[in-house]
Each structure stands twice: as C-alpha cells, then as structure tokens.
Length: 313
Image (cartoon, rainbow, N blue to C red; front, side, top):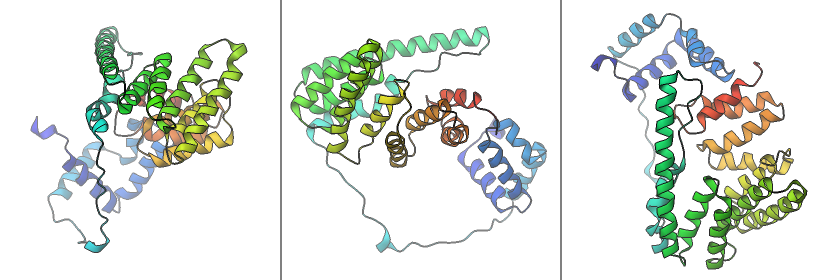
C-alpha cells in the first residue's frame, strides 16, 4: 500500500520532471492541449506514451541530483499582512459563514451508475438533504433570536436563496435592510430572490417583476461597485429567465470571475449561458477549469455535462 500512495511530493517530482525533460516537455504540451480541447484525462494521457516507461523515468529522475535555482526576495518588498478586526456580530456568525457551502451543497443524484452504486448514491444524497435541512432549521432559530444582528440575517438570506427558498430569502434580506439600510449584500440577495419569484410566477407578470428585481440589484451594485454578488445577480436576472444577457451583464460576470477566480459557480453560470448561445469555444474555455480541475466541486459534474453537449472542436 505504501508504494501506491500519491502525495504532493509525487506530484512535485512528476511536474519537475515533465518541465525539465527535453523529451517529455513537448508531450506535456500535447497533454495540456488535449485537455483544453475537451478530451478525457485518459485520452489526453496517451500523449506520454507507455505509462510504465514514464513511471520508471520519473523514479530514475527522483534518485539523482535535481537542478535548482536559489531565489531571494527583498524583505522590504513583501507586503504587510492584511488584518481585519471583526465586529462582534461578524464573529458570532463566522462559523456559520465558513461552513455554509459544505452544509447546503448536495452530492449529485448518481445518474449513469450501476444499480448498486446508484442506490448508495441515493442514500448518501438523502442523508445530505436531511443534514442540510436540520442545519438550516437551526440557523433559522438562531437568526430569530438575533433579529437585530445584520450578519445573522445576511447569512440566513444567503442560505435560503442557495437552497431555493426564495420567499424566505427575501424576508431575511428585508430584515437585514431594516437593520442596515443600503446594505449591498442584502440588496443583492433580495434582488436575486425577486428574480426567482418572477421566474416562478405568472408569465404575464414576469417582465415587470424582473425589471423591479434589476432595480434592486442595481442599487446593490451602486452601494459597492467592487462586490461580486450584484454582478452575478444581474447576470442571473437574464440567464435564469431564459433571456440572452446583454453585454453589460456578460462583462459583469467576467469581472466577477476575475474578482474571485477560484470560484467555480460563476464560471459554471457563464459557461452554461455561452453554451446555450452556441458559443462553444468560449464555453469550453470557461468550463474546463471547473470540469477538469483538481478540486471536485459540486459544480464539476454540471460543467462536465455541459461540455459533453458541446461539439468537438
């Protein structure tokens, strides 16, 4: 078992070898190009030829002195660490803020699996839904006890919106706005809740309700022009309603991705819309970091599904 372990040290030596080997560096380029074109990892790995030979070469490389450069960095150029003191209200709900994503995100339903694996996946998902609902119920009770705490209401608003409880999301956002009028995150979550209410409501009222939602989202953006959530909410006010987003909304999503480049959700939103519009190359470029990245985010299976539906370049 020890011989088969894969650690960051293995990853480091493999990467070092592939970059510094005159033979392997072109293979690495072909491998990365294949992934960029949407090939599976297995198909892309064929660029390296015989896997046993690659393994033996890496072991031999690891057993000899490796080339390296020593680099120094002037201490006076190192930036000071950014320290932000939390308010008492922020500190009280910091734990909930940290665990929010893991509490509300659900594992995929387990499609395209054999019957036994599908049954296990269904049980795992049912357990996750039960755990999420219990956590959300506790959060509602806590937010009710701290009705004058804006952080409690903002946390609840986000949790409700991200679990599809849009009426409850709007109500929590309104409570946050009563405490802190003009709050950008509260306005953003309220606007997004209004978008979902409009989409779920009568078609005859949808256009007017979407305009009202965009008005609230615009106020959120003006309150904090660097905030990411209003940009995402504005984009979704079109995409979720099946309307092609205007250039301003697309530019806002690109800014949101640049602002938080590691976040997979915004890439999935933009990539899905680009795929819907038939812009396959742009969709593939946006979705590949989510679908082929090393982190198995909840968005990864959705990104893979969209990529599969795109025509091969």
